[in-house]
Image (cartoon, rainbow, N blue to C red; front, side, top):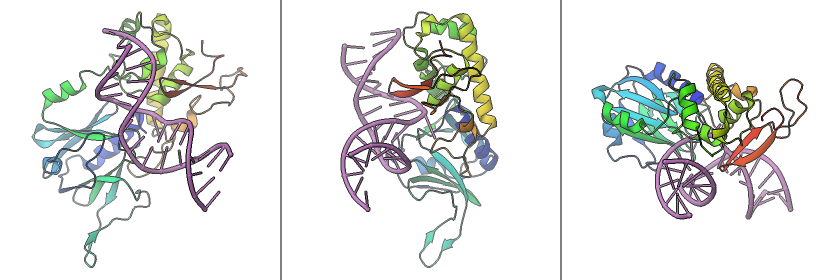
Length: 287
DNA sequence: AAGAGGCCCTGATAGC
DNA sequence: TGCTATCAGGGCCTCT
């Protein structure tokens, strides 16, 4: 599912809902996520207060009382749902909640608050939860990641210097979180289209002007995607189960064989596999 | 060091 | 209808 804009959409609604709220209980249905949930997962969360929900790159950061953190990564198919608590059915002794959007399967974790609960759903289980005990460990956790595309650190000097003499193609660098952290397969293709740069170009061959275009266009498209509620291809839903709207703005992603949207261009969008991932581009506009 | 490729997992969809 | 193959927005690991 989620690249930076989608994670940011989740962060905003989650933060609004759980900020300053105390965790009452935790239910774990399946520990086998990308990384196995630690045995003390529930007790770590229980009785703690949520200070706020932050984000770095594609990671949600839950700030907990006592200076601890919980990182959440949604992987490819993770979603977080907020549902109202329902009373326990005394006859069957089961709790239930009604939400038309809550999937029936793969609801692995529930974090329960006073009147509602958040439910982590993830069919492919590429996502994970991870506890961080303090600031120092948090810094260390993100040390190997590059700057966020939206940050001031993602600037001309940084990009030009990083890509200098690199032989790998530029598309795969945009997906490389050590270079820039938060862009995924959709926004990599879209950024290169806006920048009129062919995804197969060797990163080291980019001019300073082209680097600038990539920086500006990645920021532009990510901000725009956030303002539209993110992109929904198949899995992405916000915390109330609604889809984002940015997929309507795709210029190249999933548009193979369709007409290029640049004014005056009569070419058709191509799809090629690069580094095991689909890449969409116009080989007439992108040189 | 840098780059290529495999793998974790389930579900939707296409093709026969 | 039902089988099989292919593909999916991520990131870690290993090998060269």
